[in-house]
Length: 430
Ligand SMILES: [Zn+2]
Ligand SMILES: [Zn+2]
Image 1 (cartoon, helix red, strand yellow):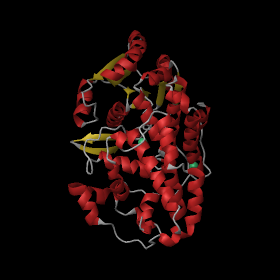
Image 2 (cartoon, rainbow, N blue to C red):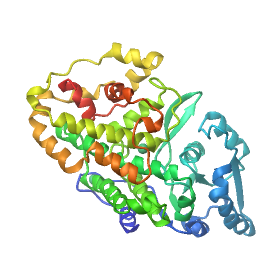
Image 3 (cartoon, rainbow, N blue to C red):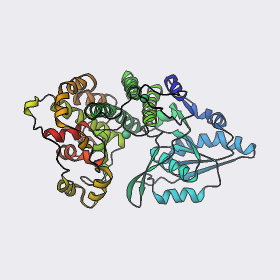
Image 4 (cartoon, rainbow, N blue to C red):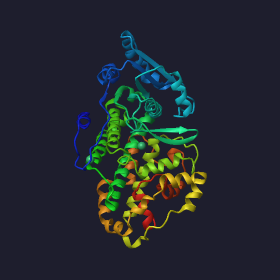
């Protein structure tokens, strides 16, 4: 299964899209019992002599303790350093804040390699510190929950505000399928939701390419499609928590992470379904929603797909087609309140809709409809897949009212400066 990835890691030269796709990952181990291969994998990366492993209480128990048991005696025997920094997990969950970063950095001895053992949050903390200190880091995920393990963005909560910092991706990823299968199942189900969101994300990318000529790469798209294919092929085994099937979910998430690395941003993996999830996380239309990232993405993907098919089934004569008009600043102000300036400046200047032409969109309408019929499952089909794999499938299952959907549909496009079909629908009165 990892052959496809090894081919990618060895890939060099110019892609058919005209670009060279840089991939920073040097080593990938994904199998049952992979933790045992960590010492050998680290040696293969270079002569690192001082290692710091960052984990929390939960992930120390899940994998950190084993890693420490394997690495610490070996390193110390050779006069090298191995240090564990284990963060306390608060009742409301660990967050990647400036306080936690300071706490880790204050307790770290001098080192030349970091090891992130844990969830997305542990990875964000580690990649932020690795970037600050100019160090390499190795990823050891403890759950197949998100596609961000290979990310080059650290998602932090800085002085109470969510911020994204450019950061280093890992040089190696070592994923033990037995560890992933033993994680709480809600985390795997969340990974499934994050993956199913690729259907709407890819549709958005393709439509934007058709309407505005935005850059696109079919090789990158084929990675995301392969990720979806692999996971769908073993959906019943995923639901049964079979370690090989959970490994497949992780494989899909890794392919998606590599797709993002190859284009240098999240375009292949994140479209309108992620914009809905981000809006929920912004705490402006709802507060402190406890759902996991992939739970929100999966629910949103089904709703977005349903709405896309519904709109595309309308006859062009029924649409209120009009040329681009300026942003509805008053409406944005009503929803985002004191965050309006930040949303307008960071995500809507320039407004990505400016690049789109309503007439061209309508000329392409039949083609877009064919694309949806060919590549985008219906809302019902996506909810069916989410249910089969034990993932949350509706707004009410993530503690949100169904009534919220109209606002999510209307406002989500403004949370990211990225053209989606959802945003294009502003040109046709939908
Ligand atoms: Zn390409
Ligand atoms: Zn995601």
